[in-house]
Amino acid sequence: MPPESPAATTPIEQLEQALLKKLERGDIELPLLPQVASQVMALTSDPSADAAKLSSLIHQDQALAAHVLRIANSPAYMPRSPVASLQHAVAMLGINLLSEIAFTTSLKAGAFQVPGHEDTVKQLWRHSLASGAFAKEVARTRRVNVESAFLCGLLHGIGKPVVLRTAATVAREQQIQADTPMFHIVIDGYHSRVGCLIAKKWSLPKQVVEVIQYYGDYDHATSSRQECMLTCVADRLATHILAPDVMPEEQLRDHPVFAELNLYPNDIDQLVAGKDKVLAMVNAMNL
Image (cartoon, rainbow, N blue to C red; front, top):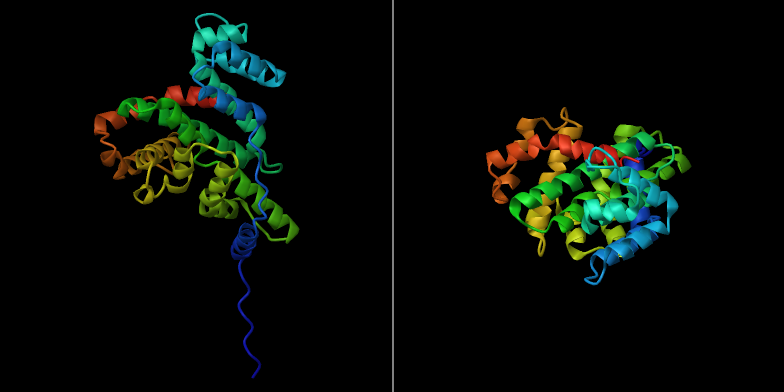
């Protein structure tokens, strides 16, 4: 009797195996941190930085400057009068908020691009924005660093568009019949691993690296457990407001992370009640 031939692998198994091989070979194309985003990050950690330096930096990229002014004039930031210049934007919003807008805008142009998968990328980007916005609100409630919390929330899923792009390329090259649900499976399974590679390449702050790896498994975090828990909350809130059928409110609240962060039911009420503010920010930044 001839030996039985092995069962044919399913398309998702083929996709995962090919993706794993690329990871093991170090054959994943990682995006560069956009130059302006890198410079803005350096500027915000420089105690001698001022509004003039930030304005000058943004002015170097006319497209970015136009985006920043449009966002500064959006309902999310509710200017009392039209913001006509970057100097005016700094005066109205402050250097921290303008840095946040400039960093986020330049990041979108550099990392969140996967031709042929625009709808999925848009969902990933909106989730990142909402997570960043909610992370700030949770940080205010817990009285911890708001700027660091925003960065953790915004970047916790930075590996997702890269996994999507890599998986889409593999599927095309190997003629694997992959659909959107399959791509979401590999995104969920591998984005933390790829995100950590990106974080190290970009020299992101250590708490961001740990958040990328452990926000969904914060008990294994070492030095940044609080940031991981905070980002876990922000991620759940973002899913709730953007996809309430996936994360209904009862499921949102039914997680030990809220108690571990000393967030009480009324704190959760306030966070959920702030969804319009978060959605306004998401829509303003949704370039």
